Amino acid sequence: MFTNASCKLSRKQRNGRQAEFVQVLISPVYWEGKIGQRLNSNQNGVHDVSQANEIIIIIPESSLGDILPEKDDKIARCDENGNCIGASFTVTHVEDFRYGSPHVRHIEITAK
Figure 1 (cartoon, rainbow, N blue to C red):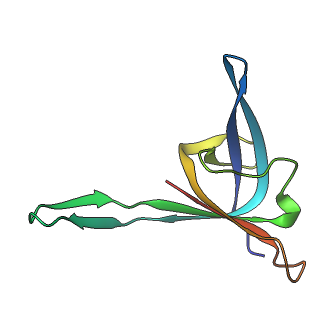
Figure 2 (figure 1 turned 120 degrees about the vertical axis):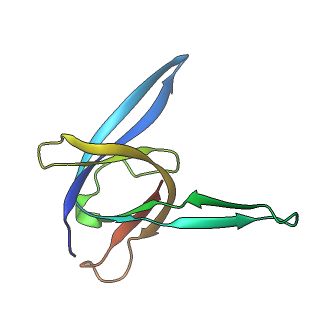
């Protein structure tokens, strides 16, 4: 499976009233940024253009550790030393493809 990056997953966990963040470095992964716009319109003829930028991350099964990504987790692209590059994104969708041939089992993440 083609990989081109590493990423850091951050999950907020509640410990009573205190919030703690658990961070996990996941390497290697495939990271692809998609840039786009969305045209929104309603029945009154009001048109609006908004950003529809998304990030697609494919994590091979061999790169997964004990923690699996979930919706609303934060994810950021990192270098091989774990230093984050750019902004973090919020996970909006996770699909599990850990079946079939062992060479192509993976998790697909969409984030904004």
